[in-house]
Image (tube, rainbow, N blue to C red):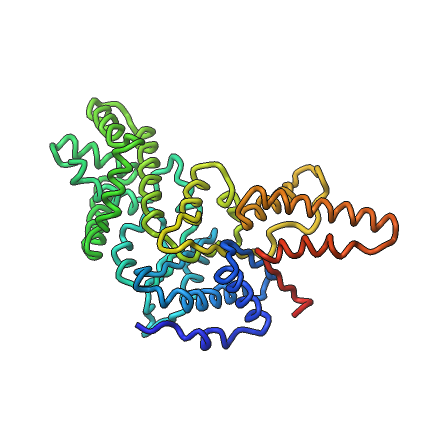
Length: 388
């Protein structure tokens, strides 16, 4: 397998896009930065810049392919249609006869078991997710195909077919509102999909069962729901809660099995709580992009033309605190609270010097501006139409 022709891939880029690509790559792979924001103005080709960085990243990682086993590029955006479109645009290997030379898949995180075996056979993979379907799993049963896959994964280890009553109860739990006749079709489709892919990754399955049977005690909860259902009690709400929990368990083990090398968060302001929130969805996202020292520490690129309004009146009714959002994002990019506090002090000094300069008619002190610019340019870049 040949590595991508980096110069051919970079050749169509405009000069300002090429400069951005090289700057971002240098920061991420030469100067120790792990997270970077590309905030180019709308229409200036942030996706093309991301594609260029992918090309240089592959060139950088390629000599380590025997050690890494594979290289995973993960793309996250809030719109499923855009995710499916852009994951193919980011695939630097292109297509042959309409088919991608390397796996490019847009899926739910919890449907990844159907793809993991194939991921392991490819040197490079491009995977896209949407936050609403992949990270926000609370009290949700998911889609029918997802529940059918979960049923097939657990049918043997949890002995759904031990007797007729237990099998019927298990089917009712997983099918939720799907009719009995239609549910049979879902189960057959899931079984066929698993078989066509050579089964489920054994390491993933072992980790999934351990997670279910461990601290969360979901095997016991399943048995309780089955017993209540066999006694004739309605169990829709209990089934829904149970399914939400096992989906979250599966998502956790899928993230740990994925180990991405480069993660791209597109228009991240649409799901900014994932970078620093304190709910289950943010915790799951942190599993994806935190530096856990696996095959390689993942690099994270944020893309957004307009993460903040240029001006927000302090305390204005109905407005978010864009100042606080900026501080939270800078903390994420710089990687520590102490770095955020230093930046906040520099920003405060800049504001105070602006006030003083306005009152006295002098210019803002260059050292105050320089300190702020130096810190921000470590982790972000922006090109505007005026400069182009």
